[in-house]
Each structure stands twice: as C-alpha cells, then as structure tokens.
Length: 366
Ligand SMILES: Cc1ncc(COP(=O)(O)O)c(C=O)c1O
Image (cartoon, rainbow, N blue to C red; front, side, top):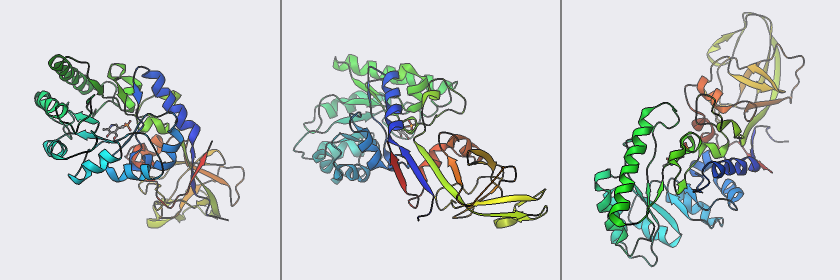
C-alpha cells in the first residue's frame, strides 16, 4: 500500500483542450507549451499523449527539448528563450529544434555557426512586455541578416508575447497587437511575401481572435485551466487535466478552545472533528493557503484549518455526516478549481500546478 497522494492526469482532457484551440484558431497550427515539465503534468507523457495531434512543441530551453527527443518525440521543438551559448546552435540544428532569436548575441552565434542543415527561426519582437525580443525598428535588418544566411531555413516566423491578455479589458493588449501588426506589414512590404507569425498564448486564443496567426502557443489552457479571473464563455469549455488527490490518514475530536497545527493559528469555536490529509507543501500544496481554503472530502467542500505542514494538512470535517480513515480528498481538479485555491494564496494556478513536487506520483488515465 502506497501513500495515497497522487496527481491523476487525464490524457483525453489534454487532447480535448488542444482540439478547442484548433477549433477557435482553425487557420493556424497549435504548438502546445510543454515547458516546466508540461506545467507540472509530466512533459514526456503529455508530449506523447499529444504527439498524434500536435505539429510541434514549445519548451523554455534545450535541456527540456533533449529530454523529449531522447524518448522519441519526433516533432520540431521550439526553444522559447533560444540559445544561452553558441554551442547550443549545432545541437539544435542536429535535433530539429527551432530557435527563438531575440537578441544580437543569439543572432550572431547562429550566423557564425557552420551548420550541416539550416535551422527554423522565430524572430522575437518586443511589442511592450519589455522582457525579450528586438525593438521593432530594427526588425527589418535582423530579418534580412537571418534570411540571407545559409544557416537559416525559409519561413522565419515573427513572434511576440503578451503581458496582459488575461485581463480582457486591458488596453495594453490592443497596443501590443497594433504594434505587432505594423511590424508585420513592414516586413511583408519590404520582403514582398506573407510572413508567418505567432502571438497567441492561452488568453489570446480564447479572447482575442485577431491574434490568431500561423501558430498559436497555448500552455495553461491545454491543461484545462482558464487564464482569466472572471468567467469566460470559451474557457468554460476546458477540462482540467490534473486531479491532485490524497486521503484522510487520521481523525480526532477536539474541544472548543483547542488549536490545530504549527503556530496554533486556528482555534476551534465549537467541539470539532479534524481530519488529517497526507499532502503538504512538500507535495506542492501551497503553505500560504489560509484557514477556510476548500478541500473536497468525499466530494464535500470542507475548510482547511491550521497551517499547512510539509507532509500534511488538517481539515474541519465537523459538518460531514461521516468520516473514516482512507476517505478521499481532492485538493484541486475538475471539481475544485486550482485558480480558486491560488487566488486564496495570492498566486496564480500556473504556479500551483507547476510546483507540484516530484514526490507526487503522476498517474495517467485515458
Ligand atoms: C513565449 C510564451 N509563449 C506562450 C506561453 C504560454 O502561455 P499560457 O500558458 O498563458 O498559454 C508562454 C508562457 O509563459 C510563453 O512564455
């Protein structure tokens, strides 16, 4: 008998969520983001589950891409941050990894390499996030330098990233789109061709149709979660792929006035039944979760009470009709949104799923 804490990952949910992207942005291609261990879901298994339907994958760095090649993933893999050192260029070329090029150092490393086969390039333009990418007024020059190199394959993709697309009313996204479109039409006019382009993350796939380009780059929505704080009609069609679950391992009655857990930060106002669940911050359940954070015990919402420990949490189950050791607990999943848990912890669901620790076995279904 093993510790009952695990994450169930529903492969069919991943495929359905990807199909939603493809329905919404039917003219382009969908590149699921599988960086950071596929947002905690397991990059190898997620990539395998999507390999029949995804034409390419996106990761942060070459180390993540090599893991996928080693297990036989055949698709091109885009390195979203490009290369960190010149020696990565030839490894990328040999492995059919695509490179984001977003600064002079990366560009020069690429141009100076002697490659046996050309590499597919995504040219990053900074449209207002001010994190990565070239300034738009230098894009024509970079495009020309790259497209005239034998190291670079045809069809350079112009790409940028949004900073606020999850905030539907935010005018910053409009400005980024306008800026990008200007840059794109300047390129098209200068080089007399239609340039491939990519803008859309999950929020843009769902709520900004004008950002749907040659390639979409959704991450969070592939895992079935909404990037928005408020309800959104397309996001409502997503199915969370991860269920983080555990079980009751101890039950006790305490008197009113008794406190629970480290720092004794919760005190019972009535005689209470406390159930201990074997999952804690060592598993990725956030330590900042306050008293009252919901946990589903046998399908009923019950409040967390007391501080989250490394390996356990404590739940007030006084109002449940019955409770036994071994009873089922869901920490987040399709019936308890990870976004709701995250909001109570002053973070975002992205962080919670990505930080699910290695100790939690992932069990793949469907
Ligand atoms: C460049 C880039 N594209 C796409 C994504 C996917 O974003 P999301 O998970 O919000 O869809 C990310 C995520 O951080 C990113 O950095």
